[in-house]
Length: 114
Image (cartoon, rainbow, N blue to C red; front, side, top):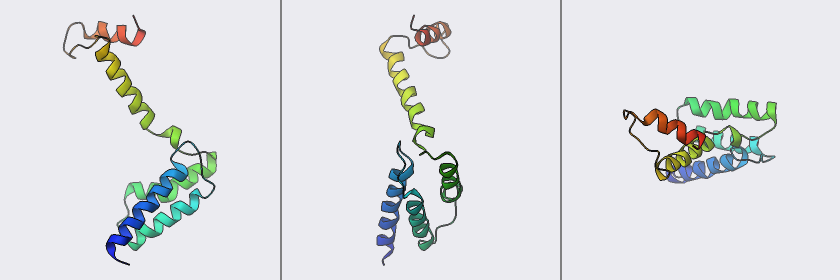
């Protein structure tokens, strides 16, 4: 198998892991998906990274302990909320520079909808 084929197989395998356990529903075969990706990682002779270690060791432990997927523990909902607030901050004309004298008052108005 060529290196390019190994890399594409690994990326497809990682996508399976993402769908299996990083969303809002947990696939019954999530562990198989993780093991398949781990084999791809090993076959590519990639060095172990902290994130790979977490995925291969601690993600299965967490899921087995709590029997739920990781979607609700993601940073993505928080980042989405932050982006929504930023748009509201600008659209609602609350925006002021951080050093502006009215910044604290405007921030309070924005978060309390005054």
